[in-house]
Image 1 (spheres, rainbow, N blue to C red):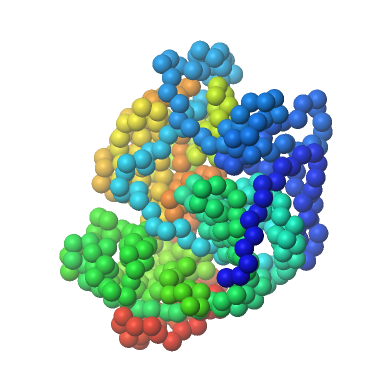
Image 2 (image 1 turned 180 degrees about the vertical axis):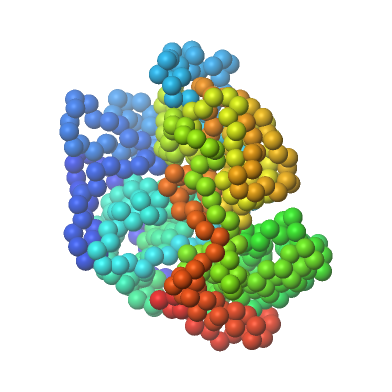
Amino acid sequence: MGSKRKTPFIMLAGGAGLAIAIGVALAPGTSSDGTPERVEIPLQGGMNGSAPVIVEPGSATANGGPAEGRAQQVAFSGDPLEQSGFRDDADLDSPTSYETFDLDDGDESAAVDEPDWQRHTLQEGERLTSLWEREWELPLATLYRLLGDDDNAAVLNRIRPGQEIEWQVDDEGYLTHLRLWTDRASGHEWVREDDGWDFERAEVENGREISHMIISAEIDGNISAALSRRTDLSPGAVNALAVMLDRYLPVRTHARTGDEFTLLLEQETLEGDDTPHNLRLLAFDYEGQRITVRAARHTNGRFYTPEGESLLPPFDRRPFSGNYRISSPFNPQRRHPVTGRVAPHHGTDFAMPIGTPIKAPADGVVTRVENHPYAGRFIVIEHGQGYSTRYLHLDRALVRRGQTVERGDRIALSGNTGRSTGPHLHYEIHVNNRPRDPMRVALPESESLSGEELASFQSLSNTLLAQLDEGERNQQVAFVPYDELVE
């Protein structure tokens, strides 16, 4: 690592533009999707084209008041929407809930592994601002913050096709690490400070080392226990692998003592540092009393059997029949109408009469059926490979915890329970423990591959499964990096 430089806070006002291009020029950014680290203050007087002023958390706002930077849960003795006069006829036409709460608080089963590194190789004509917000779902304000430093701007304005960008986010989806590789041996890295929203930049001068390893184990109690007995795996790697298997296999309900599994892993480290900064499962073979599965990773990140059958079932976009309008869309930066604080809306609300049948959008296992003071009666279903769905404010649950459901099964009746402004269904989709927009997130559409896509997958899977079968167990093996295999 080389010299470090702290990235200062940046205030944006007026119609200043941003130009970052990959082979082409960029049009100025026209909006930012607020983040916890700043507050947007609309300019008064109808100034067309003006951007919001972005204020540092804890600093004074335009009118002298404190800026609120993070959503907080607020308790009221009465109903604040009633007391404020906000609840009117218009509100009844757009039923929703404005309270901030965490259904995973205190739920040990919701524990997550270390954040995955995401990767993208820049293509000709791609725009970083579009990728940042639309494809990677990162707040533009974070990019503006990075660009507040002239040296950062000089680096990011010179990106070109073929360069690789890697990034990590926290459990709320905010950027923590960013790497821009100039070549295979050098690049730039930005790391967010532990106690704030500023970033430190450094030069990455060590080369990246990629290795493949085959790991075999027998379950004795659970997968984590089986992996933890291996001295060549760190506690973090054990946890990550256990979560991977739980994500890609229904082992939570089917694993039994004596089951055996073999994994083909790809790990990436920086030269001189044995701690993997990325661990990727490429293929596995699981032989158990209740489940036997053999599968490989496809280019879409999902796993399929050698015949092209998906381990992830197809999804319906909406968990009900008929047409019900969206009364409140997915919006991580929505503000509470009374407090003005950021109150993230991690789902999509559909206005519908109490008692409307709710259906499972895909096969899965019901993991939670509970009551919550704000969410009301709610259900959580795990679908595998990191996909789960949540259903809030229900009138009645028609399933029980641990029950297996199939696509189209009735699971509940919609309602108006908990803190709600009117009858509606609040529907969430989580991918790898992060809430995603149910109306935009990419969903599996078919149960099996076919045609050219099947042929392409089988060419890739034959290579991966051959490594799995022919490599010496519990040793590193000769390999071609996965990213090169899929080129």
